[in-house]
Each structure stands twice: as structure tokens, then as C-alpha cells.
Image: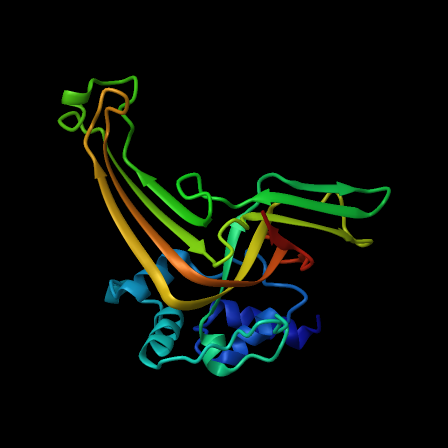
Length: 254
């Protein structure tokens, strides 16, 4: 990556990404800025649901989401269309890069210079969906309290889960093998999976559930599950610390 290209990628990650060429520069990059975090699934979800607080509004995400919601879109993705084909402005505005930590499943054979990736991104609640983010607040009362006393003693939990679902619902495992001669086995090992996703109608669905304390689970639990809808255009493995794209030759499988 040239210095000018790296600068464009840095600007695209740190400044509002309203222009389609900012996204395009990231998609064609050979490296990403250090500590690259991608798009925040929670901000995308809140922009879609119209609940993004003004004080924390992220212009890049909110405006991109607003753009493709206000203007009806034609179906850009056609059967057999290559993922690397040129993107129109409207489709690019619907493209997001979600970064998911990969704490296991990455193996490197130094003698063969062979990198193998086998990482599951399936949600335990919905095995056919990819887990983008889950936030759990509050303490579980299991083994600590009996059901009738759980709520009064403050054993109240909320689960905020954001998923991504495609038509190929059973493909939630990231796999791939690549020869990487310049890979350093002693590098940071702070790996992450990057999902390059394009949102498509209906864009998002939401489900809210509440469970009163029981003898088996003496906790008052509220669950909010938001499911983004679309296609996964590409899957990468990156080193989050230095921004290196280790390989783009990954795929989703069953």
C-alpha cells in the first residue's frame, strides 16, 4: 500500500464516511489503520430504528443509513455477480465493515507458510445468524438467590444482541487456507474477522422478550435482539493492532 493510499484509509476510518469513495478505498486497501474498529453495529442498528440520540449521533453511519432508506433501491446484487465488481453509489452507502474478534481458530504452520482459519460466528440463541455484538448488563441470580426474591434483590439482567442474517442462514463458520510467505508467527496475534456486508430489504428486524425469575434461572431478564439483513460480500482476517490484512481469502461455510 502506498503512503497516499494508507493516508486515505486512515482518513476514511477517522473522519465521517459519507462519500462512497471512502468506502471503496477501504475495500480495495491492502492494509487498514492500526486498531481499526470498523462500523459499530449498535450505531447502525440505532440509525435504522431511528433512536440514535442527537448527542451521540455519528454522521457517517446515520447519514449513510438515512440515504438508502429515503431512496428506494433497485436490487444491485445479481446472481453470479462478482463481489469485486464496481459498486454504485447507492450500494456503497449500504456497505458496512463489521469487525469481530477471533480469539481462537487461527493456525499457522511455519514450515509450510500455511495459514488456516476455522472460526464460528454463530449466535447461540439463533444458530443460523452471525453474532456481531452482544452486551450483557446486570448480575445473574443463579445459585445466589431464590426466584421470588430475585428482582427485589437486584438480580436483573438485560441482553442486547445484534445479529446479521443472510439468505444462506446456515453459513456461519469462517474458513479458509492461504499461503502467506511474509507472515510473522510471532506477531501480535490480536486477530479479528472483518465482515464486508451490504444491507438489503427489510434491512432489520427486532424482537423484545422478557422472562420473569424462575427456579431454574432466578433472574429477571429482558432481551433485545436486533437482526440486520443483507449479504456478506467478503470475509477478511486482520491483525487489529497494526491493521495488517492477513488474508482476504476466507469464506462462510456451514
